[in-house]
Image (cartoon, rainbow over all chains, first blue to last red; front, side):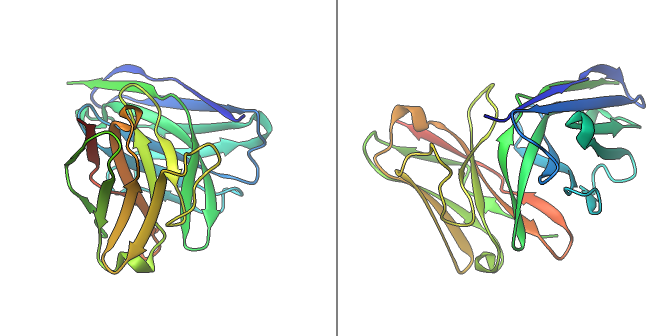
Amino acid sequence: DVHLAESGGGLVKSGGSLRLSCVVSGSTIYTYSLIWVRQAPGKGLEWVAYIDSTSTYIHYADSVKGRFTISRDDAKKSLYLQMNSLGVEDSAVYYCVRGRDIVASVYFDSWGQGTPVTVSS
Amino acid sequence: SYALTQTPSVSVAPGQTARVACGGNNIESKVVNWYQKKPDRAPVLVIYDDDDRPSGIPARFSGSNSGNTATLTISGVEAGDEADYYCQVWDSSTDHCVFGTGTTVTVL
């Protein structure tokens, strides 16, 4: 079974930076897209960023564009999220997700357990 | 931007049928996926590509998509089905993923 394990979350002050990592085991990753999804306390799921299997297509939610950078290293079976200029609104549990691209869509078939990020003012 | 609207809560007795609606403009032109989210657990994919079930998901879970509404149906509801459910699409006009607002299913 595929297993995704996030790390790098923690407490940071507003305006600061964090880098999240995710290691994938039990599966190759080079044929899959990878995604970050977050859930703020008491809120719903929010898509953050997407990277396709070849790093050709990269997309961001409007709320993070220009501040966050998604990247992947298939040799290390890893996904990353560099988060800069963090604000309190970025406080959430961040999930690393494996994506399956189908015609006109992508669905998320495997999720990590999440890593919490808390931004203090 | 494209938006998906869900009823905040649905209550159902054990053994009955729960229907979770996901409304979006001409949603039938999009592919809808559904996720189950329990507290302190990672989300789980329960329906993809409108009406397909991943392996390991009980046949009690089914999906449909028509007009402006996609629906997740849970037949013979069990206590373990109590959770938040989210619909999701990919909006190809903006290359953005969109999640619905979420529905809490309560088993009475």
